[in-house]
Image (cartoon, rainbow, N blue to C red; front, side, top):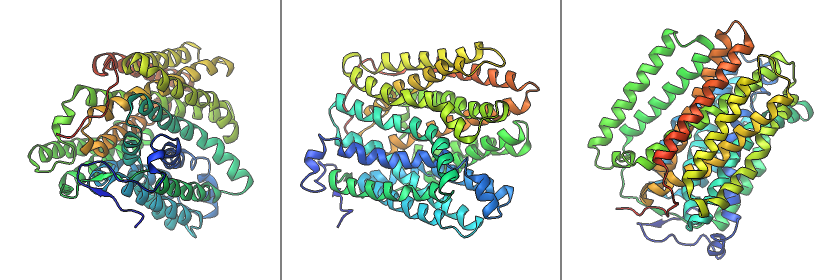
Length: 475
């Protein structure tokens, strides 16, 4: 059976004869990164395609909004559920299930006959993404147990987010203008098939804890909290922060968080034991992830609007203009992975956050209508700093988690990062909409992003361990 997993807390079995070698080869990394790349790419690649989709499928404005936002809502809302399922059923099994769901849903999106069908397919796609992402980090931790190798793997995994998110508009523009919008989804099919085959061939089965209940009340509370928060933040960008619907959504999200904490305090098998959140390394690094996603994706969103609305760039030209922020991410992740074994994680995370702060502060200081060449260095600093810090932050979160809760820790980290991205985009949109002078709103947004990077640098100095350590063991 292809999805067979080992039971209990012992050493994972072998996926096949090559699995043992796969632990020391790049094959597991390639498999996991392919899945993660698909997930993040689909967050942004659709943005340049929705006007064409709306015309061809006669979609209403609400339908167009759900095509873009429905995927993100389900993805963010079910991350904790995906992590809990991975810990219980085996992370490789759940990861593969997610790849299958995501790939099939992508095919359904590509052949959607109307807007309603496409919205439903996008929701299913988001569910597949929520199953893929938590297991991806857990599988890398399993495949590369040595701290140095694990740091390099985490760095390359993290760089996929920046590359995919920023390359989405460029790739989407190319596909829409050449072969049509349906190829925005069809491109996922060969990647999904290759990801599944590589995972089954080279990634060893994961331990599973079948005796652990899933704690459905807590899972529902997390889904409600993240979905309400993400929806409220998305609406804030359109309606404004004082809108009653936005305020109600934020209030209900807080109530759902309180319900989750109370449930986890008394649950026999908690989805995320509160003792893990009391770990300064885990909770602090998760907040650092929230802050640098806030800064980076807020920058990408507001820069995209500036390039298209004020400077008159096309979608393809906007993707090319954002490319400097992407080009440095792969180099930064590889460099940080190599340096971590010498310096530890703390100096790298702090340095990355300071670089990000310097970049966005430089954009703010460039003036109301800076020439594009003056923005290249700030964008590169933000992209480099974020990717440079992500390696150590990821290693800190995963290293602080007991192995039995690797999926839950990965889900926590990625959920906080999604919240940071949504907050950065919503706040940036609100500032641009509320400002009488577009340039002033853009500068204020970049200044707030720089402040978020500075706060993350201070928090990293306090919470991120000076030296890398191996993954914790379950107690």
